[in-house]
Image (cartoon, rainbow, N blue to C red; front, side):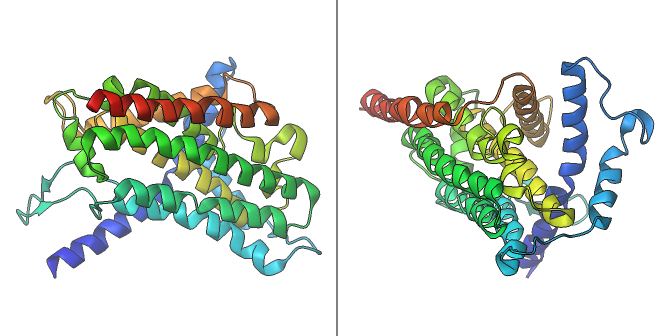
Length: 327
């Protein structure tokens, strides 16, 4: 009974935290962009603009929810939900640290909802479902720019999912397990997988940027040629759901990189493991934001060439070399 209660509490806590993540992340991203571009960023709403995300949230909640006259109303309404739900569901198997003891109850609690034996497969399979929401959103809008954004997204996701999945195989071969908890435990004592799989790390990071539609791979929502792409016709909270999905996907991708390649919660003993875990995730989120405001967007033919002609052959070669070294 206690186990079921704790699982329910974990689900509620993780869901609330994930829902709240876009508030600080939008502020941080706009502030980082401001410093990179030698300007202030948000500054008017609250001290140093710290209340700007709450103002944006209120604005989105009270904006008119417009559905184009010739759009498919049912698909148009359901598409943001289809895109958002998988981004939350992947957290069911993500470990955040080792066991902790509750101070009052004196009861040990695992810092994850579920330790699946096939954790990586579960995350890759569930995360890939978000593309259906993007495709349906572009199709249901009955508008040429969202439709092109949806088509670009489907091709991009399929192309880079291959390299992303193959980049994980080297880690799985070394650890001989698909469980994320086992993978982190195998890296204890500074035996981080980035030392043994540097090529896999680079491939996973680049393919991860493409999977979450971040610059320089944000072709599905290219403002320059598509006018915001697959969500061009969305407003109010339906637009917020798409943006929420993008930020949550950025966090989950950063967490996955930390778990697979950067030792998870492994670190010097003067800080708790959960602190090291959060610091590593924060560092990767900053690097992803930094990348957005440093590199220009690729052309579509360049994006597809990188996926099929560079990353996929490299990931296959990495698997082959890893197997030969293990043998």
